[in-house]
Image (tube, rainbow, N blue to C red; front, side, top):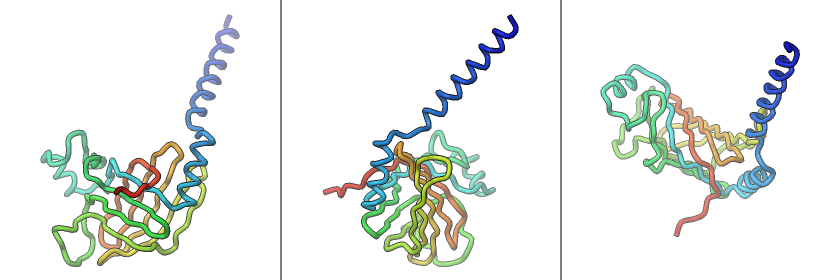
Amino acid sequence: MKSIVKFGAYLLLLVSVACASSKNQASPEAIAALDKMIADQQFEIDANWAQPMASQGLNSIANAGLLPFGSTASRIDISGSGGYLRMVGDSVKADLPFFGERRMGGYYNQNKTGILFEGIPKDLSFSPNKKDSGKTMRFNISGDTENYQVIAQLYPNGNARLTVSSSHRTNIWYQGNLSEYKKKE
């Protein structure tokens, strides 16, 4: 009886692991669509969540209740902000809200507080992810007064994760939806 229970437990474990790993596999169509977007360099990431570096100042804002509903100091809902990173041809454009702290001086413009840049990126590269069927995009670009290093992980299921490092601010991460960019008329 003991061996039957043991065999049943192993079988159940094997089926659970097999089912769990099959959920993470992307379909060939989804992988082909991701590869096409990257080859055509026509895609957009709509940011839904910002994940700033934790700091005492950000915790104070969260404790005062000044963040959007459902947000914490380390995960902020920005789905209604219109934040995006867009690649069209050889040009990249971004307008992402920023939550965090400035590290270096420079001028402060109350109309341009987010991460804003547009232009042709330097050192642009795409490489396959090591653990899944996604791709990693890396580039450097300059804004008005600061430099950015951007790493974007693009997944066939339509998810994306951005890491933005700035020469003047604390690092910030974004999560959002990846889609083919179609010019709005």
